[in-house]
Amino acid sequence: MTVFADLVEHLADLLEPLFAASAAAAAIVLFTMCVRLAIHPLSRAAARGQKAKARLAPQIAALRKKHGKDPQKLQKAIMALHAEEKVSPAAGCLPSLLQAPAFLLMYHLFSNRQIGGEPNTLLGHELLAAPLGGRWHDALADGGPFGPAGLVYLALFAIVLAVATFNYRRTKTQLATVPSGAAPAAPGMASMTRIMPFMSFLTLLTVVAVPLAAALYVVTSAAWSAAERYFLYRDMPSASATAAGALA
Image (cartoon, rainbow, N blue to C red; front, side, top):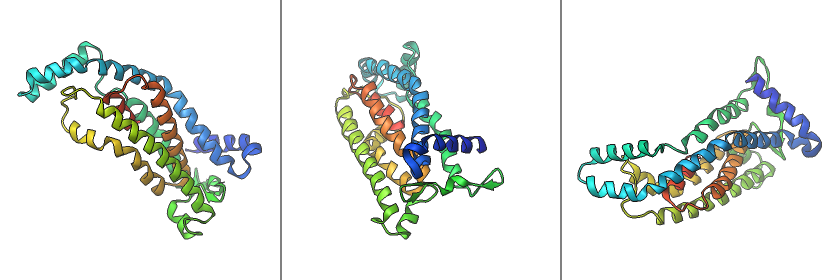
């Protein structure tokens, strides 16, 4: 964690001439973008896999018609089809899994008072008037929702709501175009499909609960994901892109 803290500090030093007291916040945004850029090739590979999976929809519909009364046989047939076509049912998960360590590092970095036995100087950095180690309830206690720190959170909430609304509309459109009978027979998939359009709004809960630095990571990553999915899946109006988006 000490190495990670030093990296953030060095980035903040480089950005200080441009962002002054908010340089550490800018460093977190830049770090997040670097993480997303590093895993972008995996996102592109996942998109190719999802598009290949979408092309199998007519064949899956035929299998459902043939084995509809035998769920186990249907599931085996679908898995065999995926294997034959070299399509992973979990395509799209890997980029999300690789982001988890970076988010956890950011969370712990701004949740600990000490790092390597030394005071955590990063906690002294701010985004405008909001401490990077503070949380939403701290902002409410210090000036309320319209105080200097509260306004920073309101701006983040607005960004999250804009991204979530974009994802919601796109997800609903994609789900509406799924051919009847083409949905996978995985257990619980029907329930997952119903809640998918609302999953992006859960980001609001994360922003409220975690330190501001981690919230910046989440908001930046969410905005990147929305833009990335738009360009990678713009020619594939199907549930496959939706599933990938919900996991990103």
